[in-house]
Image 1 (cartoon, rainbow, N blue to C red):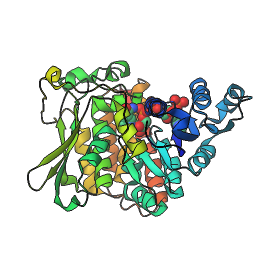
Image 2 (cartoon, protein in one colour; image 1 turned 60 degrees about the horizontal axis):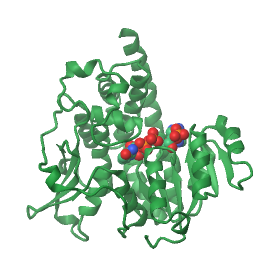
Image 3 (cartoon, protein in one colour; image 1 turned 180 degrees about the vertical axis):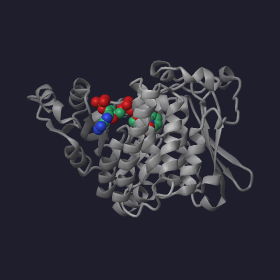
Image 4 (cartoon, rainbow, N blue to C red; image 1 turned 45 degrees about the vertical axis):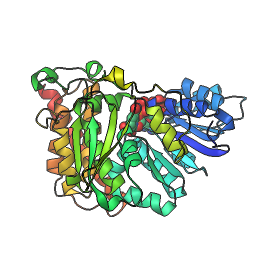
Length: 395
Ligand code: NDP
């Protein structure tokens, strides 16, 4: 059992894939004896949220959806657990005094609460990559000013974090992000053109939420991760490489100027990265599958194909332009993801729309304040929405 007794944590997005795995890790490490869970939050999955709050002994349960308030209140009646609903309630929950906040809300909805937690000074176990993609340096600065630590949960970034040697940042030559290649790794663009969200969400190695699963198929998830890596590890776009590695056993690597490569390996299971982030720098015992190298036999690698997966190229463009371009790409991608899931646009049109919005907003510059980020995000959404409406009509 990890020696985390009394460590106060809040879990934003507890009902999602990362949230459920986080609570599994909490349970494995001793449950209430190991962690004091202050708040759990969700959106519309009220049954699970209420059940989680009761099981882990949370003091507060928050739904982001105001319409779900009464359902949550009823589900937790008589338990003494405080209940709240809505956007501001989520921000207030994230601002409660805790040692660590697991930031696992999906999409841009996670930005404001995670930022609030960072300003409050909690350690941020960061799963929500959109915070760094949209707000980049401003988010990193907010964490630094708050005084907490930023510990990545994304398996690639956790691997890099673990492979970075203390005081050797100056010797880092490159960051190598591994990518499974997703379910369409070997497909042609013609084959991908007609896929539905149900087909695209079937990831070969990882079990994840809907958005990241679709993002793995389009490689938009890797595109977001490239930008995330740039801000997390303060490297230039040229230092970030992507390599397709279908087995997802090497979770990512750091290349040093002496030619050495340090990597972190493991079975594809998010609980390792979650446990590491919750207990850093400790490595508590976790009940996850162990790698069997003899059974594995081989590790494969191939260069990513930016023609079939243009999202990677868009990430490079966003990084090179800098400023609010990450927010623009992220917002356009999020809108086109929802449109694809709703059957309004095709799979390949997600990248077309993101690229068009990025071109239309190419001149938008620096992000001096969060208001600049929110304004760029909002305009990119409006532009993407208009393009989706036109594309949808044309289809
Ligand atoms: P899920 O879709 O499984 O879960 C998302 C969570 O956010 C749920 O708790 C959901 O509540 C909540 N939520 C949804 N919409 C809103 C909203 N508008 N306001 C507040 N809360 C909301 O996502 P994942 O767990 O897969 O991913 C979460 C984040 O972690 C993403 O940014 C993803 O990129 C990142 N990540 C995920 C990995 C994975 O293995 N899943 C790996 C690495 C990173 P409800 O359940 O009620 O809808």
